[in-house]
Image 1: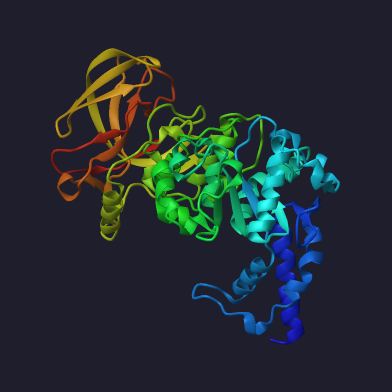
Image 2: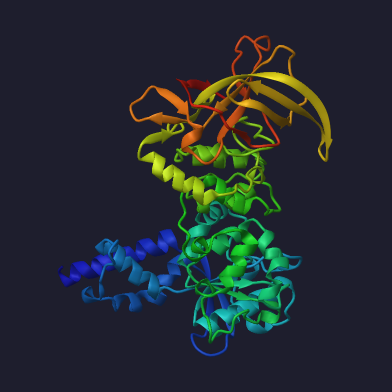
Length: 488
């Protein structure tokens, strides 16, 4: 390529990366070498003057694409290596709000931060570590690098957060209650919603505990994602070590990823959904004030790109906006023998279709095909629990035997009809019928509990009922039948 054209290409990719992939504002740590004396808040466009010379050093001979890279991707990788910034992961505590975007708009002398008060002290310590331990002249911190008075900037920050953490040179994680690796289990950082993203997104991460001491000495590890500390973090979070090292955002493994978030909490209810945008790599408009509708919209966005039946493998309270979708991540629970399930699916996908791959949300509800098995309700008893009274329902079927479930609802019509809608039925490629075969699998089938109320309304149809258990059935013999299209 002509040298001028190559420089133009590098310059274009450089500009596109800064505008589209970098945080809107960063902290500039002055001077470039030696102790920090001043911290300056700058916008992303100012970065060009700082890094232009380094990017101009890129030569065509430097471009060596990896096996899975295009040529331009290799150039972009070199550009990212030149533009280095540290990013902070922490949990908010009282006093952090003292360090606002507006406060940082002018250059801040270090002596004004050295009081170690609340967020000011945290910011000072973070900047020192970014400079002293990792040589970063720029840093990003949610305490002061987002103009929260600008709805457009806040919206961009939330939707771009995963990329910003991923593109960072180092993610410095501050754990104020931790003295050593043995203390990690009690750390509040592992119970917050946004820190799940901050754990998974960066390729390089370093944990610091009380008094900003690294949990693993720097001379042993500058990247804790390459250290045996991940074994303990995997045990605490139930996230596989492979995902902790190199997580890739997708709309696959929905049940497993929701499980990672199920015990975490956020101050604002909407952030339960917004903190998962990057993990599932979906687009979602930010609208604080919408409450639990945010999680419904997240599930709606995931459903548009997910075709796996496991997304319906949940229990408990349903969304206010659709009974076939869960209210929040806590509805997803641990399922044993997950590896066996995936291995079985891999084998059977070569011969059969498993479940409806074309389910979709419509203005009539969730459109989905199921293997419908009508059952008879044989008894109903009231049981008391921590959340009030529930009904224990017993069902009978010649092939399924007896099945008992605890229902979240407490009122049903006397003449209601009942059925199980199996979502992970099997079907021959090109075939019209679905089937259940207990002899060719090692686990039960998963189903919706369905009720039909012919006298309820002129538009009577099957509806999904909420249960305190995931509905599992185990047929006693092979059965085959036409599939049923439902709108739930």
